[in-house]
Length: 301
Image 1 (cartoon, one colour):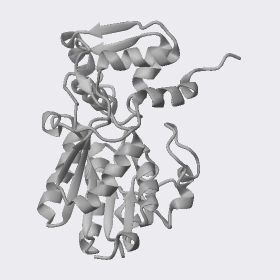
Image 2 (cartoon, rainbow, N blue to C red; image 1 turned 180 degrees about the vertical axis):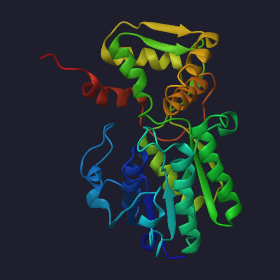
Image 3 (cartoon, rainbow, N blue to C red; image 1 turned 120 degrees about the horizontal axis):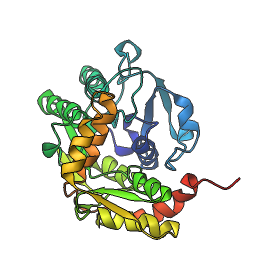
Image 4 (cartoon, helix red, strand yellow; image 1 turned 90 degrees about the vertical axis):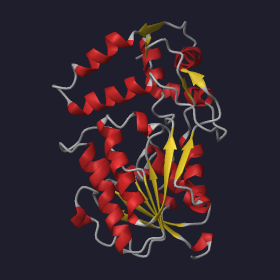
């Protein structure tokens, strides 16, 4: 294997929240970076959750779509390490989680195997064994099963939740009230993209199949809600919704949108579990909220 500063890495998902930080971190640690992008213009500007602009840190942009294998020919040629955080959070082109989160990543994995890539780093979910009935997690875990059978050296990163996900609490607080599922006492230690990127890049040397990880501070959901109100300088207004009410309400979304049903199902189920993983990093949710809040607060005309 080539020395660290000579290795070539493919970042799939380079325009997403985590992918940008990972691109930045690989480059910072001396890797040559090829970025797969569907819309490379996104790499030129700061992301919606303050992700860095990374166009100038990419050695080669590969234009392609994971759902269209014909656009991916040569994607992994000459690559030592593949990193993928590919997945959908918004419905597009009528493709679902199985088409993108599984098959899209499988298309990359097939190319990685053909190109004799040395290592594949993939991002899935923390506590996935308790979430496999949810389409989004089921699709990603199907890819994990394929990785485990591939014979390829692989690592699955399992974060508790991104700081970008936690902006939902901030948005609710801005609107005046935060709604929690259950008593709000379940715990989570979400992680900033920059801290998670370090975990992903150091995984190259660790040679572990599974790395569960979270941020440096653990909160209850109620504490996250209170933190959001505090940063905004508002009096907390929190409504705790009983699970017997929420679960059937989520089911009512299914006939209208399978995609939004799956996302709602994931977040409501996750809020009924403890997502407290081994701690890492230095970025706190309070600092992130303070930094991003002005972006969400509507300025008076």
